[in-house]
Length: 167
Image 1: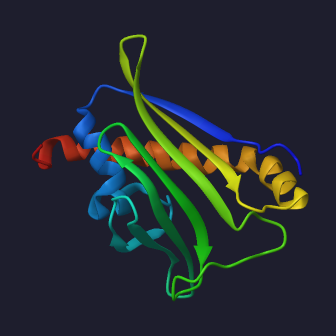
Image 2: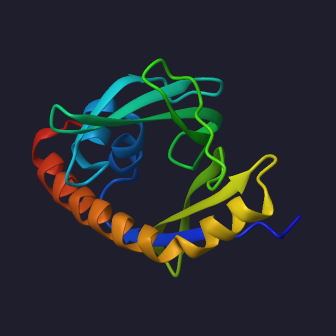
């Protein structure tokens, strides 16, 4: 079995940590930025240990992609850890032979050089095959493009939320 690669990004922020946390755990805020260039529908979001999120990303009326988050650890404004998988429309995990069935996602809030920082990691989880791990490793450049677009939208929603969301 190959070593598990990680996909990592960090983001520094000046906004209140509570609002940054809510961008990840409040369904209305999350759906406003997650999945750029698609309509993101959060069918359920219980960001608590043992809770789940059911997320649908819609491309018009013709296609949807479904995801499930299973929350393993929730420390408000400190750490959020979940297992993420692609699902069918009934929230049953899907499996393809070329991509890890489950990804482990960790979002860590911390101080770095006196600034608030988000540190995000994704990695294959469970019994991923060597081929799945290799494909994950190869896809990291594409992940950069997707997360860059998502985080640009995150910043826009965050800026607009500062004026309308009561903390």
